[in-house]
Amino acid sequence: MEMIKNWFDQGCDYAVGIVIYGNLPKHNPTLLNNLKRKNNSFNTEKLKNELKKYIDKYDQNVFIAEIQKEVAAVVIPAINKVTESEKKQAVLFHQLPESMRPILLEANQLFKENCLLKVNLNELPAHAEKAAIAIQIKIHSNIRKNQLCWQKIDLFIEKRIVPESPKHGFEELTPAGLLRQQQLLYASISKLNTRLKGNREQIEKVTVLAIRSKIERQISKQEENLIQQNEKLIIISNLIDGN
Image (tube, rainbow, N blue to C red; front, side):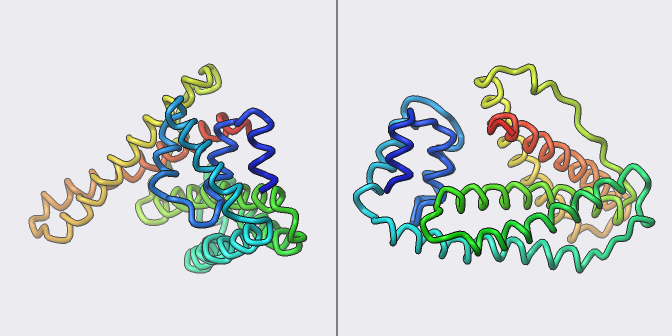
């Protein structure tokens, strides 16, 4: 496959290789997650070996057909999910404080941009696999940002909490420092999700008002913290990707 051959010829950039592998048909999701966790010599060699397999295993036409299948199975439902979310919320600007109106504007713009990107993706010729992958990556990035916007809006609508933008100094970090911080954020978000899920399950069983109120306060703080951690992750991932 020409794209993978070019990757080897151009120096095997790890981040680019992860994107290529993640968009290959029948890639191993567990392996992909492991490769995303850390850029080291072992993972680099593993990534090279996995990509080499596909050079001989798939010809160009099979690859394009599989990519289109992946788009239909993953990207389209994701866009439809955002559509359903926006219809469900039907939030108007006057319902939000002035500080949050730009967030609603951003959510709407991201959704519209993804609709346009999906049209552009549909119109690409079969051989334009690099352009197709680039559009898919952009759509995925926009979906993550859109979801974060709606998490902030939901938190305000449901609990009248205006989440603060997180403070960070990621721009001053080295590339290695950025990757370390990214991994710490992945771990932090995973723990937060676990605790939040536990509290949500626990509150359904609690009948004592004082205990229920305490858990509700914990849930609100965890939801706000989770939004801030996800926002940090988006910021640091953009810096790593050079966006």
